[in-house]
Length: 96
Image (cartoon, rainbow, N blue to C red; front, top):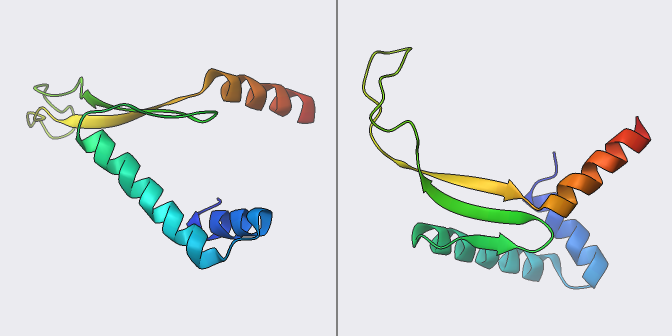
């Protein structure tokens, strides 16, 4: 899996900017996305997808495992960009 450290290194190499600067920008971007989600705004990242805050469809239902009522709550959904999804599927088929 590629994480923050690897992404920062790749972007720094691609841009020629210092890793510290890229790491700071990454943190600000993630914090800004998080803030907007908390405020109820959808966050769309072109070429990647959209984050949405939604009511969980499971609120008020009884858990099959514990028998306890699941409280109503919010959940974050991510919908992958349709072009990215299509391109991944095409590449996977061609590589297989």
